Image (cartoon, rainbow, N blue to C red):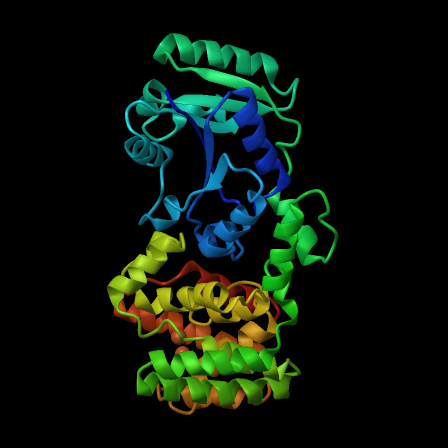
Length: 394
Ligand SMILES: [Fe+2]
Ligand SMILES: [Fe+2]
């Protein structure tokens, strides 16, 4: 009977802890083969842009080059939607046939939680487990749990000792972003790949000009003509306001270019992205609110923009919020008073915007709230809080 180990994870990036765990499992549990299966990652859930599936696969290949019995597998990356462990194990059982015995390799903490996993009964009755942990870690608890699962479901759980299991990928990413050494934490070839492909770099120094031209190319392609024209007027207005109130004009220009980039997506695509990015359900079916959040998500995911002020200026351009930055106020107002706008109080707000940015924002927020209540439409709590916050200083 073939004994196959399965090790899942983000592998963002793969590090020495993963490789050692796979090697230790291979040897200590006498496996024939170990597969490392990277998961699909949802960008917004992690508050950062993960490396692409291809990059993570490539880094795994490099890390495992000298390990003939250990290999990466792109199964989960090729699936649609969330990959649950039970689905992956079902697929692997099918691939290797009924005679193969599958061992899911994981850490002690996860083993303690096994009964709460999706479809846990199937997981516990059909498959075996290898729990890697450093000696002494939650020993007693783990012992009890292993016994309990064996009695209850007949589950086989092998324990292996693994010193390096607690290296954290977060820590590694932080070191890489700060330009610190990751010697010994990730395989040398993986470190080379990361350097060559500019992964996990702090993108704070991304030149704005380049972002602007990429953004312009995108909106020229993806926005309706009238929306594109509106965006150009918002851009001009944002530059003017930035100069007037002492903000970074190039940043204001960049935020303006991107601010409505998701505006012309079809409704079903918007809803799909709201779910994919893990945004609040209140944005489903509400393109007016969703487009600003989605524009910021796309800036981050597809353009690698990590400057939070830029992202927030776009994410809150429709609603405002308490504690708006100078840039956020400028983009919010530029969108509201660009020369193409012609609602009744726009002249008054434009006039105020000549001298008083906060008061102009207040008038605009009041107008938004009055307009939405009159229509009986949903008013985002951010809008009310933005108004309240700005009124405090008047
Ligand atoms: Fe907008
Ligand atoms: Fe707009």
